[in-house]
Length: 505
Ligand code: CA
Image (cartoon, rainbow, N blue to C red):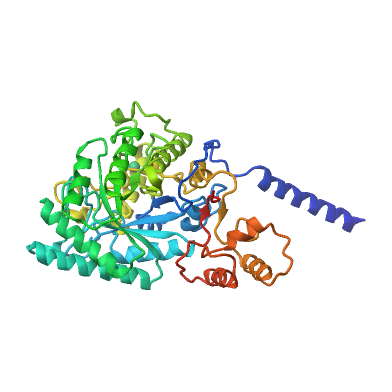
């Protein structure tokens, strides 16, 4: 009796513990997010994200969690939520003469290798974004790497070619699955210190040649900004007139500054229809809140929000998801299926130490700690060491993340409900490539199901679902089972095993 009573009490306690953990899940207190599906013209439409700062953030102790608060590899969290491609910036030599990192993730090729490898593990391809600079390249600055100082354009072309090809080979040898390469970043007014059209075209073509020599399957991207300005069409004409060899015409699209969505589609259509190019958005982002959480001012904030007053979407997770959905839709509207996809910029650049709600000494202390980490690990947008290379901008205003309120993660690393927009846009009937048993995960059962099916054995699985195991797209065969096994063993495959897809029409 007493033993039974004890057992009953223990069981009751267990039930209470279980109920508490089940019934009281982690609440992000952000509510759920609803997403209207998009009828994609391309089943592999790119739903990409740039998370270039992530290695530095992890060095500063940042961890990421899924929506339920469970800590996990951010690359897995992104893949589970429908992201299918990762973008990474590459700087030539972001280090000062005394070996200190410039910050912004200290993204030289070795950082890109780490990111590319982890992306490939979850079936995600890589867009390699070469800045051809030692630090940030954008419409305001296109400074050549220190080592290229004083080079003629011809010598720069040779250096750019060798560097590009070398980096791509390193990335592939280390296991990254390269899908696209950007020849320069936001090169609206120049590239690698050159700003005449002739010199720019020569440099683009040197990079393009390196990509072509590397692989015929990799797309060459040229990236501009400011689609609201008709000059961007002139740039499309320039690329044609100067015989630049490229595949994808890309632009940044930040809705607070870059005009309407219908204009965006029209600009992309111009390059697609007139010159037969693919078109995409290489960068976009949107705040889920106007609050800062790291003590470094944000580009869009309560005190700097003039441009955002007339936004179509709220500054909430729902508004953030709506923006992503709207930009994808605008790209998908490009005619003849030429709209290739979109990348969200730095969707995980969260705080290295939360200052939310702190004031006085507590705030000062946390901010001092954050500054220490930004300097030590390069986890802020710029560190003081960059003053040597960029004295007038980053060297003056260095600090933390200016986009922590545009991430898909709360300050503690927990995924926001807006993150699943990347999967929800696919609608019902979406599936993971390789998921032959329809479980939602890729595991050895998928390989077994395919083998049984190919051996004409009973699988009790609907043929439509079984066909999701057709990795290489040439009909279900034992090869597909082998590829799933290899994927599970960590091999990098040319197919995006495990990424979410829309059922083909
Ligand atoms: Ca901030």
